[in-house]
Length: 390
Image (cartoon, rainbow, N blue to C red; front, side):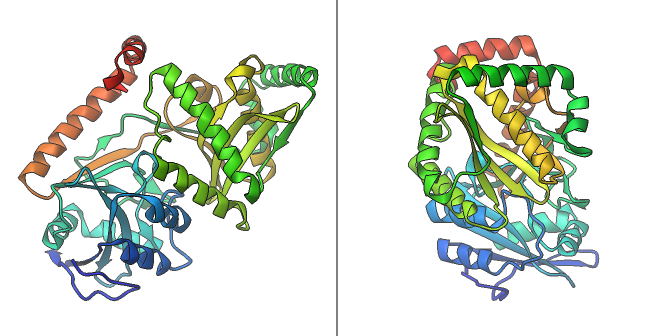
C-alpha cells in the first residue's frame, strides 16, 4: 500500500467495464487518512457521519487502522470512501456503530459518475487494489442523498435491520403539531411546565458552551450506562476512545459557526434532567444520542426536551428533525418518515463470500425479529438475563 496525499495517485488499480475506467488509491495509515480529509474540497456532498469534522475526530481517537479509499472515475474527480480495519480481517465505515446514514464523500457529479461505472467495475477495482482483509462491510448506508444514488448500494444489498425515523418540519411548529396530536401534546406540555415549576422551574439550553461540553457528556455517559445496564444492553459509549471522540467532536462543533454539533439540555431547579446530542447538517437536525436522569422520570424530561428541540428546529428554519437509527414508541409518536438503509458486503476472497452470506442471513433474521412485537419483547427480556446476548 502506498500513502498518498491531496490528489496525487502514484499507485492505482484499474477496472474496465465497457468504456468505464476506474482508478483507486489507498490512504493506509492515520497520517494519510487525515491528509485525505484535509484535501477534500469545500463543495462536497456528504452525510453528517462522513463530514470532515466527524472523520478527523474519529481518526484521531479510534484504535482501528484507517484504510481510506479514493475512487477516480474516468473524466471525473475523486470520491472518498472512509474505511477502517475491524476484527483484523474486515473493512467497514469509520465510526463503528456511531456512524449511520453512511454515504461516500465527493462532489455530486463525481459521485454520480462513480455510480455510473457500475457494481462490476467497482468490485473489480477494489479487489485489484488489495486493501487487505476478507471483505468490506458497508452497513447502514443511505440508498441516495439529495437525489444522488449511492454507488455502493448494489442489487444484492440488503435492508438494514433498524429503520431511521424522522419528521418533516415544513410549515412550522403549528403545522408539525397538527400532524401529531397537537392538542394533546400542548396540553401535556403545559402540565409538564406546572410540574417543573414545583421543582423550582426549568431552563432549556439550546446548545451548551464549549467549556460545558466535558461535564455535560460525563453526565450523559453516566445516565446512559445505568439505562443500558437496567435494559440488559451493551453500553456502546463505554470504551475510552468513544468518549474521547465525542469530547473532541462536540467541543469542536460548539465553537463552529454555524454550529455543527450541539448538546441540548433541560434543567430543573438548576440541575440537568435530560440531555441530547445533535448533529446539524444540510438542513437536518439528527439526534445522535440522548438520556435523562432516572430519578426525575416522573417529569418525563426526555419527552419535554424533544418538544422544545423540535420547536426550536422549526424556528431555525431546518427541514427535518431526525431521531436516527432505531425503532422506539417515542420516536413513532413524532415521526412520519421511515428510511430503510442498506447493507452491502463486498467479498475480497473466498472467506469474504462466506462472511457476506452470514451477514445477509443475520440481517434478515434480526429484522424479522424486530418487526414481530411478540418475539422482540421476548428477546429483550431474555437479553436482560443472558449477558452474552447484549
